[in-house]
Length: 266
Image 1 (cartoon, rainbow, N blue to C red):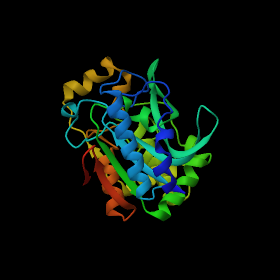
Image 2: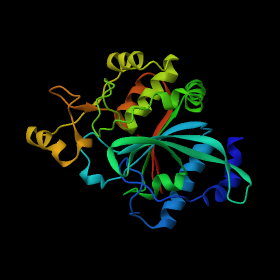
Image 3: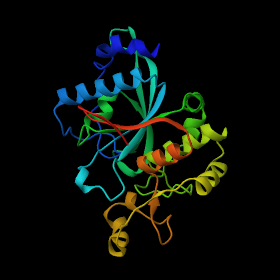
Image 4: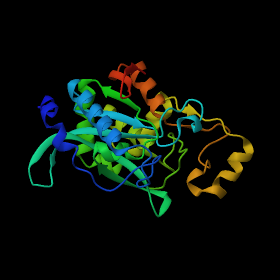
């Protein structure tokens, strides 16, 4: 069924909706030509379909790459789920639907779960560059049950922080929600304390170096930049840290980076 996307992709990508996306915020202006974004969105879908992915973790760069902290390659992570999609004319096509956690436009300290098309996902990207993790077939089946059930929404904490500590339940960002869903699928639970215990024991978050002054002033710039849930060291979930965890624990069939011209091992 997944491979039918190869013939239906053109129809699916005509489903444009609200403009998106910079960082982990819904909305914002496009930074790249729309035709290039559409072509790259097609490429990612076709690549996932050719690899037989029913669900994948995909990341994009919503800020200029040179502005990212050391150890951070992407700013936003989401699940791409192969789905039946209703087109404007009422017909149904097969394609990928993107399951995101986004900051709210009118309050960046709060988030919502938002579904969109691949074209919308990449519309606010600063580079046509996707980080991709395809889970093992067994894990894909578990993740699909979580995403299609009540646990996906139950694991959402709407109190948002860009640098959320993944070991606590105080704040959450898009990548931490991805990690929580991953752990829920792996361990068959949506109980948040159990999931956080697993993360604290098994997962190595990405350290983020930030000076004491910048850390002190960050909440004044935006409450969404708080680090009050951290101790002396700041560490958060990133695409790279999730990729390392899954690769080291044999949870991924493939981990790679896709650009318009290349597919490279991540």
